[in-house]
Length: 337
Image (cartoon, rainbow, N blue to C red; front, side):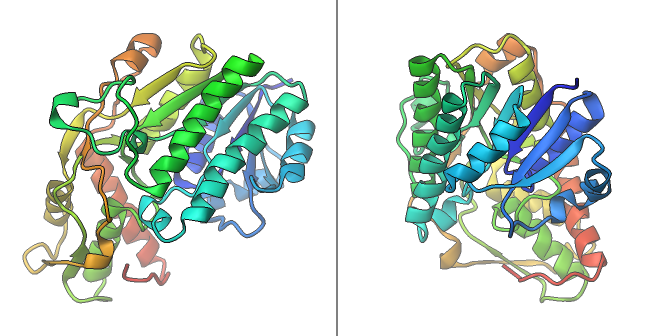
């Protein structure tokens, strides 16, 4: 019988790319958890396979409905669980802090407690975030795993809880859980509330004549290290298949760093409208506090697995922009946010 992987948040950018990777590179069966109202755009290309029950299956559940988790996990009996589902937008967490904390902290606890009560023993990946490190001083760059947490948003606080819950369940109940603190990762299917994706979407809308040639921006001075989502999901696969050590935690990230403004400049350079595009700052796009130095030390994970990023920053940004051009070219309508 094929091994079984269960992915929470399968309809998100990372979950959908992880599904693609596992279907292309393993013989595992892939089970994805989604809410009944989850948009299926990112997994639309997998729906024919799901209808044929060809190694990909979708099941309805919600992190905040513990019985729905119990039903799915009892049925699937997964060998691997990739816990990716979250309220993942830091900006949104400032206005929806309770929802963010409930989904990310209580939801993670619900998932891990169900696995414990069912007495199953899958290898579990708990997805934390580089945001747990918050506002880091220049003296602590690059950020290693032992940097202390100083979260700068309700989202980051929720991911501290997620991170510590993963460590707690591993230690207290001998569960095989590994935690990742993934730094900025992007690419096709990135949600349009994230800076690089909203920039790419606005450029594509400008090229299509739908909006004036002005890109609305927030803080352009934040420093980020960029990785491609397809490199990220390959890292997650290696995490659970190369000597997984219960309770371990790892920084994962790319090897190219630049400011958000420099990233925007590169995206604009790819546009047929680059000579006419203007930039306008909007206060609503600014965070009350920003984790503005996000540069990782990924030595620990690389030494453990041999993983290295393979996709260049330039390729990632080109693919992201082409993704939005393709979506808009299909005649779909999007908010200019």
